[in-house]
Length: 231
Image 1: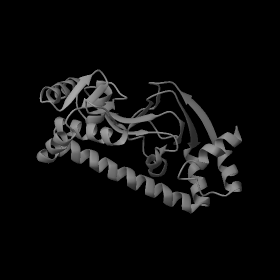
Image 2: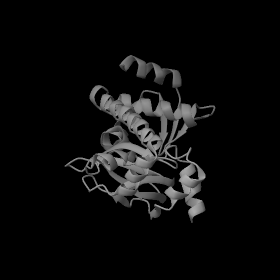
Image 3: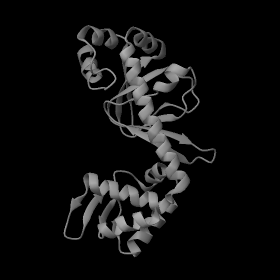
């Protein structure tokens, strides 16, 4: 178990540069936890008990409104850490976390991680860098929710997917959505009905062909112009 844990820790940016002895010392403080798809790791407002590292699978970080609507803040994959901030500020978890798919995570208690950082200040500096990057991402989410429409956010997401994983075909660029319209709505900060409505409009306007989770971007230059004209 220890060797496997050390391998996982080595893939985590926070701990990649630790010496072998330091890695063994940290691995001795780590426990493994398994979560099924949809299972919650912790809820928003729960007391912080420690830091989590993703070994496999994906973990969704989200906030839930009083009306039950989700806003996804991040989806963390293997090598990522999360819940760093409350480990240090003593507050509760500011958001909830659940498994987007079957996942294995490593857990370090709050006290153990604080003690480790006192002994290894360079790790604490890396935590600051991770938290700073996460803050920039959250500012971007706030800007999108405050200053753009659902249509703009949806077009932006489709263009990013087309660039990152799109497959050229004779009909256009094929994009496979890996999430349901409900999950897509949570990521875009809206409701499922508006996602479906905007996809239908983009299809009626000739930009897309939509078949379930498969999207053919028929007019990629036009979609880019549509996004630029809305900014």
